[in-house]
Length: 148
Image (cartoon, rainbow, N blue to C red):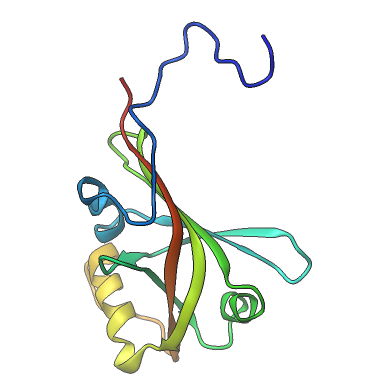
């Protein structure tokens, strides 16, 4: 088999879409309690992937971290980011967002992290300390709603 060729018994994914917006039928993957895999570049050029709580406002992916943390320092040096989410019930239903952190702002009153904590754990956020919210603007969104 030559490189890039699919074996004959390999299934085919339904149309893999490439856009700059998350398709409406897949928004739930970013707005329910499915964990996101968030990748960034470290100052040494290595890829670091973190499992994080994520949200989607219809245009941007949002996530959060303590102020002064590594993620914030890294994104201030290099704003490139990739986020992927996979449906727990149908792993062939997924969204991958590649883009840039275009805004970093304080999580006033911990409103964002409290909303995420309620979504993911069913209770308010328990850890003390100030946090910041990262706004990710997609440059490319790849997704599929399943396989044939």
